[in-house]
Image 1 (cartoon, rainbow over the protein chains, first blue to last red):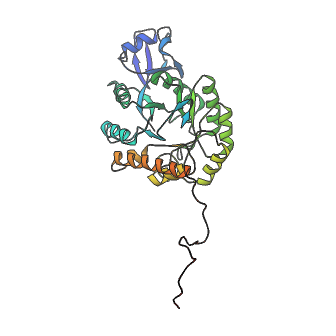
Image 2 (cartoon, helix red, strand yellow):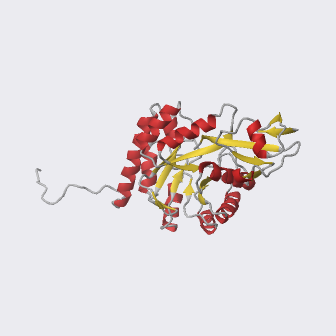
Image 3 (cartoon, rainbow over the protein chains, first blue to last red):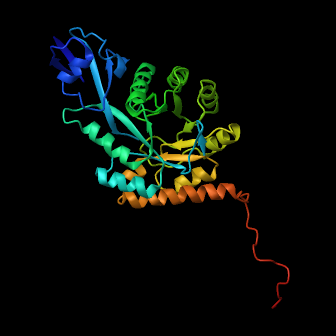
Length: 65
Length: 255
């Protein structure tokens, strides 16, 4: 199914968030996630099911003031 | 300085953005003597640059104060804070809810609302606010135990645009840790903030954009220390007219 990851369309075969992150190459990364504007904790990722058109934000540490 | 039960020796907080290189950032952090550095969250790229940056940050040994920079709504700021807490493993959040793109002025209504939500969730909120007394009161009511009034707009380097307002805040909230956040451009600005009785200053651009960031970091640290010592030593009152410092008594008469 097609989902939007960090504002870009991606095709994923995984149905849950945890597997989708692995498929997208974020498995070893220090990231936090939000699905459709709502924070999803690391411990909840495996239980959260994805639907076509979902908007996923994958954020990482960045320089800031 | 004690914030949220944590004793902090250095009164200089440093941002990590806009340095010419990670090596220069690390050098500036070291020569500033800071114990608290601010960071942000942005979309992770395929090359894992955020993860690499996180590893560099951890080497500094500093406490991490994540921000919600760029958030314009309560919902954005609250979601970002929740993500930051998990990512950085800290309840600390430098809460920014921006109300105006040109001035980066805080939306104080959204700020108070977001502070209330986050405090209720166990966050320890460091609110980036204006120098408005009433807003300060509302933030304390919302659960904040520290206030971070601006000196001037973010990144402007204008120094303290309204020292009288900061002085009033200091007098009004004597027991509340106050950190001047934003607008510091030169060491004299940092010293002035400390002389007003502020507990600390948070700055970024003034160091990152200096010709010699590590040198400026050290200068800022010295200024903060000097300003604090000056405040503690209780400066003299200003006078309108000259008052001779050399005794007048015993002057010779030559005419």
